[in-house]
Length: 253
Image 1 (cartoon, rainbow, N blue to C red):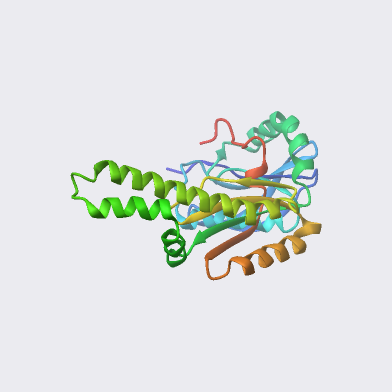
Image 2 (tube, rainbow, N blue to C red):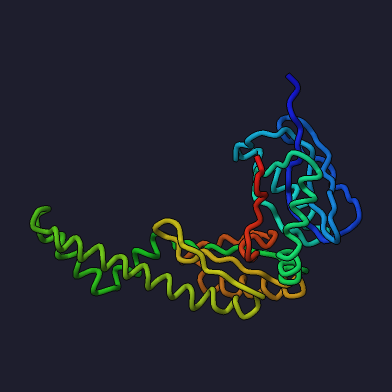
């Protein structure tokens, strides 16, 4: 049985001209990446089977590589992974429906990139600072001084003290790392931290004209924190975290 081909969606750019962006490997085959236009916008697409695309490392990388390739040439509103429509006509209909939103989104992200910064505390440094906290040490001593059964409420107290200690560390990181960077960025978001030692999980929308200034500030702040934390500085990315409406293709397979 011949597999049904549809149109896989990567993202939307501002153009009314047909463009091509090389090839991408989808569903085991190399496929041309091109545009389907509507008014002054175009969807970057590839012809591919109508199926559910599993979020494997290979598939996610193929999707992201195309978005990054396009981003190097012009601003792109990225589509979420795995969206497929049945025909180019459906793509044009979707673009038509999104025109109002796109007119608001493009001016906000044009000539801008997103970068991410995660700050993760070194275990030894966190433990050293913790030992200097009297409330935390008092709670720990109470637990160690009692049997497992007798120390139930003391363990709750220790848990609260440890939580408050980490919240304090995160607040310090927000003040000394996040806030200075927001003064250079066009927009910024402090996202939920993940894991026991993460102190900051942030995203910044940076104008290309200020990219070097922003990078210098990140390096300057890192020098102040060196030996205490690890900086995971990633990007540039399309403005995933700064698009007001996450665009998903309604009715996509």
